Image 1 (cartoon, rainbow, N blue to C red):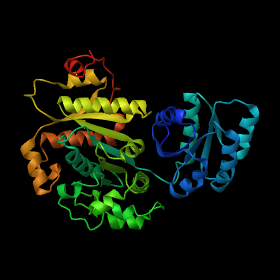
Image 2 (spheres, helix red, strand yellow):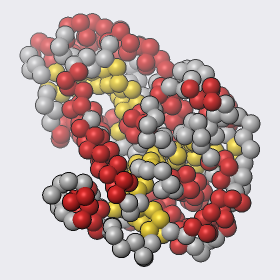
Image 3 (cartoon, rainbow, N blue to C red):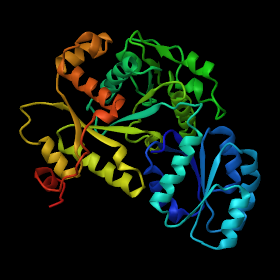
Image 4 (cartoon, rainbow, N blue to C red):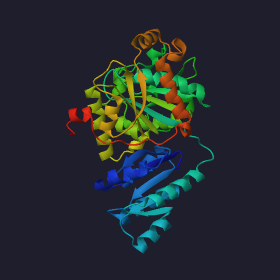
Length: 396
């Protein structure tokens, strides 16, 4: 398994974008932090984004791309460059290797060759920088409890991790991470997004606010105008910097209609999709998963969590959802409205306010599964499409 590989893709062939992204994201531990389609942009991207791997599709103009890449490869000897092409011309392969490309991958890319190549990078880069896991918590409908889960998951993981954890509020307009922990931040994520240059750790420390549980918080912008100025490259820069300082980077959001959504999902090691036992929520997650599959995302990194489950909900069941989505539910969180609402209103995490509550125990189970993935047991099995929800969604 490739661990902690940050990759940049240079690909001018629009028709090959999804296939190339899908291949790379199938590698566990590999994150695509930037995708560009203009070779002349490569040097500027590498100046601003820390990475271990650069994957270059030479087609459709291999001679031009090699000419542009040659001085860039020479400037960054510490990086690994992979070339990709449909051509198996011996002269082209030789020219690419002489330019400095470490691997030449023929299209369609062989899975075994790609895995072996990325594993070699892992061994080369396993010495100095330890990268934390980025966890995206994404709500499929309003009111499913995304922020509550993010806050409490962050508090639980902070007590398990050696380098603690940080919660990043990516609901840039209306986020309430700080509110749920009764914190009053003086700085926010906006203070780290004023440039695309590498972010100094001292700047990050200044922007964070620490809770008594040990978890740190990077709050949403204090003003609407600041939120509107934040771009996807800004978010990539911030999350990469945080992953070098913390074992776990928990992202609350982004919201479903946010422009930074695809960027965060590409960077995430795990994405927790939160839904509830309602048709609109299931319909939304069905559309999301299908679109992600079309765009080449690795759906194995997606974990489905059903929140606010109750024993008296006799219309839809977890089994119905699993059959409809052809994907197992990772965990359920029971409804405890009074307890959770009281914790929210007093600004306390559940492990302090109601340590024996069922909701707290469920979220702690999620934290344990993330922190100790080897103890999760048997592989998840996909089920066939059928059941009540399938009929509702028009699949039968």
